[in-house]
Structures are given as structure tokens and as C-alpha cells.
Length: 150
Image (tube, rainbow, N blue to C red):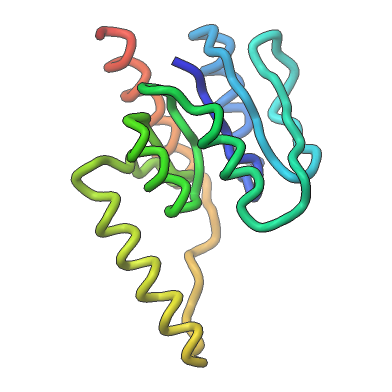
């Protein structure tokens, strides 16, 4: 299994959590973004910067993705593409995207986009908090434990 991190808008609170997991589990990790970001220094991390443009990082992740890899992303369309390739996806707040729930997440995202496109002002997500980071850490740890048992 490889770990892919969608580096665009990756929360700083998650960087030490992910780095600890990478080092502890010795997970080959690829961080892909359209600008330089730094999760931390590790022999297990490779950084790739893609061209500027909508979805360039997403396209590169999907291109490199294999079955059972894990993607960390808050981008629901990327999570959908990940699930379609029989890989795994987790968002920044610890929600695991699965075959059973990804279409619902996508439908809600698309509905909210349609509402915003019609001129309606909607509230965005709540600010990212320490509680969100803890939930992410718990979900990542749970996934890695299950994955390592198989």
C-alpha cells in the first residue's frame, strides 16, 4: 500500500499525525500539490509538484493510484475516482469514503454546488479544529490496523 496525500489545502494540524504514522508504519508516501508543501522530512515521503490548474493534483494521484492504496483528501470527486479504482480514501476530518457512501457524499456536494451557483449564500464547513484532527488520527490508525492485519 502507498499513501497519497492531496496536498492542496492539507491542514497543518494533520502534518505531525501523518508523519508519525508514515515513520511508524514505514509507509511509502507521495504528497502531490500544485505548490510546495512540507509534511516533514522522511525517507518514506516523495513530493511531487504539478502544474497550476484545477484538478491537476487530482489527475496525477489517480494516474499513480493502485488497488488498496490510501488517499487523504477533502476533495469528494477525487475520493469518488479513488473508490472507483478500488483504493481507499479518508478526509481531513476522519470520514472514510467507501463504496457504500461515496455516491451520497458526491450527491450532497453537487447539490450544494448547484445551490451556490444559483446565487444562494451558504455557510462553508466549520473551522478545522483539534477535535477534527483527533478524529482523523483515530480513523487513520483504525484503517492502518485493519490493513496491516490483512
